[in-house]
Structure formats: structure tokens, C-alpha cells
Amino acid sequence: MFTNAEVTIFKRVRKGREDSFVPHNFKAHFEDCRGMNIMASGRALTDIDNIKVFISLSELKGFKCEKNDYILRGKAVGEYNSLEEIKKQYNDVFIITSADTFDYGSEHLKHLRIGAK
Image (cartoon, rainbow, N blue to C red; front, side, top):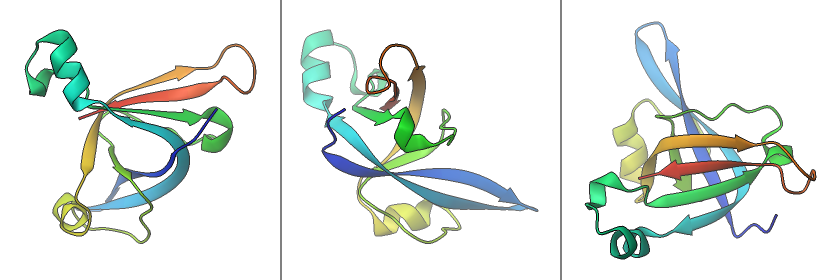
């Protein structure tokens, strides 16, 4: 799989009554296709996955990505206490709307497809 970016997936971790967001960094193929999706479908901007990310399963090494996690193009380090804190530091943070595993075929083809907006 060809990669063109490093992405960070933020997992929400509940510690007592407090949430924290832990970043996990991966090499991925990142496509920002907002304009193309709107023109092709004629649907509203809010109805469409704006972002497509493909991560090799060998890169994930057992990491479980889920709907409602957050994704960023780029590398983030440290732990964050709120989504607002993440958005203050990074411009384009997207919510994951789908995470589909394609685990068939050659080892080089097995991947996770993430849709986000």
C-alpha cells in the first residue's frame, strides 16, 4: 500500500469522571475529497464522508479503530484532556464515521478504510 501521510487517531479514554484523548500515530494513505464528493452526489456537505483514510493492517498491529474516534492528518504526541484542546492545537480534526476492515487477499492488500467528516 502506498502511503502519503502520517495520521493520528485519538481514542477517548475514561478515567473516573474525566475523559482524556490518547493519540496513536500511523502511516496511511489520506484522501481529502470534499469538493469531489459534493459535485458527484449533489448531496449536502453534512451527509458525505469528506475524508478517506487507508491504513495497512500490518501497520495497525491490533489497534482497534471505532466510529466516533477522531483523526488528524499529521503527528500528535502527548495526552489531551478535551476535544477543544486538540482543536486549539490542530486545525483539521475530523470525527470518524466509519471504519471498515478489508482482511482478505494478499498481506499487502489487507487494510482498514476509515471514513471521516
